[in-house]
Each structure stands twice: as structure tokens, then as C-alpha cells.
Image (cartoon, rainbow, N blue to C red; front, side, top):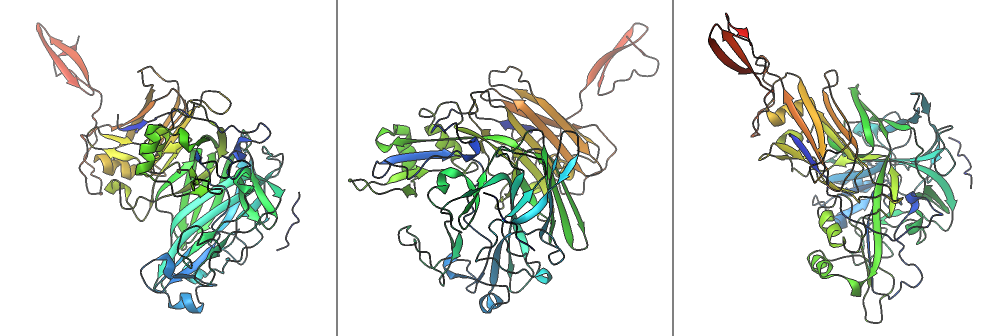
Length: 572
């Protein structure tokens, strides 16, 4: 392939905890997608600073594709070595082999575990097919060949696409797709994927002193392992880019080149299609709105198609002097010590510290709350995103959610922070709880408006509430923390042809709105679900009505879902 020259849910309750926020303010000369809290800036060395940031999308590509084996059977990173293929001397004798693979586009040679296409769909419904340009980077030293006989994907690189005429915030029509698949095999068996992480980014190309990331092991040790205080020789990733990339939002690197993140254009949905060797299972979490996901399995492969609207996601961040930390902060960081620092030590031997919790981290809500007096109620940046990934439930959550053979559900939100797993069944209240949080205002000062999508397989909903096979009905309501009605757009559908229940809410606001999705179903002839029942709240009943029936001077009140007067009586 010629390389192109680059140009320079009450059954479900969602509690939204919208805290306050801040401001390491960003320059008006760059888009919000390139905002970051600046580290290693002039004057920061030895200043005893504390940096804080919560932001959504991953930026620089620090972990490329790789293949690594473990002959100890213990799964320890220090016992793992990189392999050039699944048949080289080390991986051929390994008891366990793991991979991380950025999938390449499908072609005549690569027909499975590959990208079928990228496209955009305009407001008029017209689909505009993307054209594959090249890899970004063109190649990486850790790339490896696949083995379709064992379902091992080719370890490739993120891909650059042109969607003609779909011009984004960087005034070009080029996009970077990172379709990252991870999995493993044991004892020379077939490989199985266990994680999918997909992000689409509008991009432009920036030149500079950029480098490639690479993997390290005992044969390729990291140059910074001593300074970074981890064991030299273990399997790990060496940073790509340079210091400048920390503030320039590069989403991938080539030698001397950065794929610079830009804003999505308005009025378009985006669609990504892939052909996989095994089907995704469990849950997806998405940074998009109103997703349509289809999975079709045939002939030993699964066709995955995801279509959705991008969303705007707030990000916050600031830097303070450690001497200005509040008592709450000091108490919090005694409980959760910060492991990362930046810059040189001060004359007192104190390092600058950086706390950048991920949006789904278990203690992210607590971290944000202790910063609430420092941060205002406004986002530092509001960044457009289109992404989805597998949620790792780690054996937790309701038994109905832990189907290891199928995709169970999709939960998506534009909130800055969110629960790190599937919605949790609250048996006491009969609700599915999903916690999110965000600042009240976006970076422009406008009221931030939330979006939430829950898509659940209908048989999973029936399993949770021991419903029959009768159709499930749902209503969506939203109320603010003071009980006032909150204006929102809500959509609820059950599609019998696909077996999915879809619930969506958008344009809601206020500081602490609560989304309530109430599931119920009409009485029907016994038609028990085949899934074993679980301990669950009482099944919702249909709305009942009372009528009065008379016969001469005799009257009776009849209460039922559809009340009918007895023979000889008439309705009053």
C-alpha cells in the first residue's frame, strides 16, 4: 500500500451530583480539545505545587500494540517478555500470551479483526464513507503479525481517515481512529479478546520534536525505570511524545509528527464498523449520545457497527501551592497519597505533585468534593468526544449483568465523572443506580446540559425483575433537587426484533437532577422467562382504577386495572 505524504433508571434512578469547578484557564487561541493543566512550565521547578485535573478522553498514545509471553504462569509483569510473533521461541513455550492490538483496516490479506470502515451521517441521513489514508504512526517497532488460525489480531497502529467534506474544528476533514483490542491465550490455545477501547478524533498534523512510544521488558529495559521507582526489566510502556505534548493534546505520534486533537463538527453522527474474531461481551461505556449498536455473528466472525452522536464533556483542572491546601485536602491525601510528581525538587526537598484521577476512578467524587472550595462551578474546558470501551466488572454487579457470552448493555453519558461499572441494582428501593457528576456551567459560561443513555437487553431486564415475556413498558421523569420539574427530552423504546430496551434522556440541567426510569409490564398469560429468578424488588403492577356499579338500590365499587361491572350491574 502506497504511503501518502502528510500535509503540514421508579425502577432506575440516576443521581447526578453536579459539584463546583475551576480553572487553570485555557487560552482563547486553542480549542477546548487541546486544553490541559500545564506541567513543567517555566517557574514551576521547585515551587512545591499541587496540580489537579479530571478530564475525559485519553490523549497521547503511550502503549502501542505488543505481544508478550509469560513462562512462569504467575502473570507478573517482571516475568513477561516481548515477542515478535506467537511462534517465536519465547511465546511458543509460554504458558500465557497476551496482546494489545490497534486494528488495521480490512484488505485482501487481513479479513478478520480489522476495521471495515469509518463514516459520517449528515442531518439529511446521507452517509459519507471515509477513505483510509495511512497509519499514524506509519509503523511502530512493537508491531507484530497476526495469526487468524488462533484468532490473534495483527498488532498495528492507529489509522488516519479522510471523510470528504466533513470539516471539523481544525478546518480539515481528517480523523484518527484508535480501535484497541486486548486479549490472551493459554497453553497454545486460541486467543480471546477481553477488552475493546475505541476512540475517534478529528485531527490535524503538527510537526515538532515528537517520538514514538515503545514497550520495555528485561531485554529492552526502560531508561527511566530507576528515576520512576519501578522495577527495571518488567513489561511496561515508555512514554511517547515530549514535554510539549502534555499541553498540546496529541492523540497519536509519529517521528516528528503529532496528531493534534480538534473539535467535532456539528450536525453529524459518526459510524465505525469492524469485523472481529469473537463477539464483545458484558457492558460498553460510551462517550456519545443516542448510540445504535448492532452485532451480527456468522461464519466464525462478528460484525460490530456503532453509530452515535459526539457529546461535549466537561473537564476541570488547576494548580495551587501545597502550602495553600485546605484541611480537607490534607486529610484526603493522607488517605490517598499522590504517587506522581513533576519538575525538580525544591530547596526543602519537596516535589511538585499531580493528582489526575480518571473520570471513573472509585474515589473521583471524593477527590472532586475536597477541591470544591478551590474550584468554581464552571468547566475549564468542554471537549467533544466519541468513544466507547468495555467495562471491567471484575465479577461484581448483579448476576443478570454477568453474561460472559453476550453484550449485556450500554451505558453512555456526557458527565465529567461516572460510576466505573454497570448500573447497580438497589434492592431496597427497586432501582438501578448510576452516579455521575459535572460542573453546572460549561467553559463558555452556559448551563451544562446532560445526556444519558441506557440500553439493556430485554431478557436482562426480565431477569432483574422476574418479568414475564409480556412487553416491557417504561417511563422517564426528571426532577431537580428542589422537586421542580426539569425540562428534558426523553425516549423509551423496546424493539422486539433486536431484543433491546432503550432509554434516553437529554437536555437536563440543574445541580442535582435525578433521572427515574420506571419499568413495568401488563399482566399476561404465564410465560416464565428461562433465566433463573434472583432476589429482586416486588414486580411493578399496572395502574388500577375504581368504578361504581349499580343495580337498583344496590351499588358496588370495583377496583382493577380494567374494571368491568358484574352481570346485571351498570356503571354509574
